[in-house]
Length: 277
Image 1 (tube, one colour):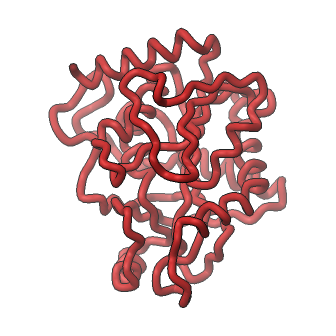
Image 2: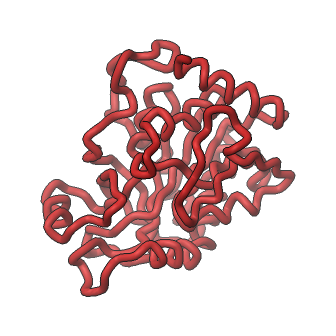
């Protein structure tokens, strides 16, 4: 079966369950999934019920696609994602993005929990992603190109939409929130990085590091969607502080910043809603 057919079957199933067609989707990273529980009039579809969707195996990723209103604007919320390190293929990892794009999504707000590399950052900071370093050693577009998804050689100059980033800065100014901005380095995991790797990433210009997001952004841009990326700095990366790293800290920080994160996303969605999305 071709990937185009898998995406089509998944989109058709979701369309049968949900009558609304939001043009905004939010992918919620580790510890950030509670935002989906705040949607009004929501319909939630477990990933296991959607044809060709993988299953989430990581704590902090609920594994549901939720459609509901955030304020006055209808959105999709991907409550948990699939990771390459779980053993899924890159096609599995990005399939939800392709399906949501097929269902009419124009803007993806892609979020993650990330380790801070920039010494000016602190756990709990929110960072807009200005650009990324794909250090996963792979790409979701490898192999024959599916012209129905996008061009063979998609441009990544505006991987993270500058107008959306400017909008996010305006929203945070109005909410009196502090918002960082920087470069996200995507690695495969599942190990946290070594101190030597973090020193290398700093020299390469990375401000934060994580194990997701990059492939989803590439797939979204391949299909012509716009992307706003937001990292929650859940911990300082290896070697930055004397304490060892663990996933529990990632989840705890996500809970701690959930209110500020929710206000930021809600404010961005409200502005996009006023623009007709």
